[in-house]
Length: 335
Image (cartoon, rainbow, N blue to C red; front, top):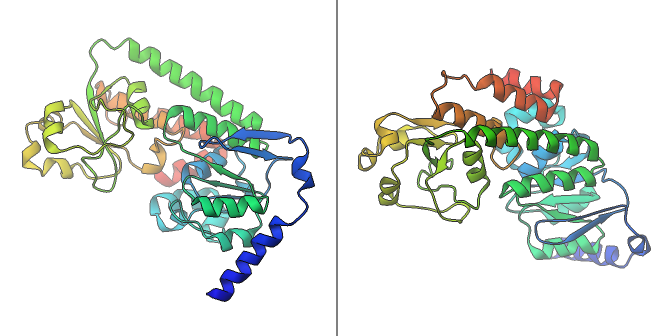
């Protein structure tokens, strides 16, 4: 272990001592990440390590996946990610793309071996970031917490990958779609009150007004019963009873988690069997532009459209976001 640490430390030192004259020149690409750090590239990145799934997703939407050389471990470990991605990338299917860490932990040595010219993360220790920067490897930190984050980060990653035109196309589509949703929402005279529950059994973990899911709910034309600004607050059963939502939206969990709790039986959504599930998760990830698909589904569930009447609209959104070819592959898998 000491020998490995010494080799790694020497690598950092040697990289740090190299001629940095190129970085002194004016950069062609300059963006600011979620932490306020400036990322400068002389040219679009060609070798990218992305350890944050919403950013990986954005890269596929930008049609820049050929630049990926490292992805998060969750891509292989989580069936909800592996199954769709393997349909649109043979390297994922073969598990040949390196996984130099996850969203929670990054392996510095594995990243260095890949020699990337850009690293995209959400969570990374300051020490690891500093080590990469010493070796002139830019690190872009994303957030994808709010609608504004998702839009800005798509634009930034588009610039960093040389996919400005594709980014502009996606952003224009998202903007026009959201404006259309907001116009329809404004015309609804009596809006449903909705409660959102996060995945993995966390039925008392919800979405506050400072979250991307709040934007998704309001774009769907429903009121978010949670009034706090916190991104993902935890509540107690008494609070949920007090809110008494008309409908409950779940993300890939069984409605029985609510139906089996007798202490919640007085809630309108439970009495009237108005619990709906955003499945498959990949279609409806609220930390990406696929929040558009989630809004469409929630709107249809809330206002009495026929069962699954939203699917045609969701399919159109997926094709717009991933392109006709990859969109069709994803849709064929889920059918």
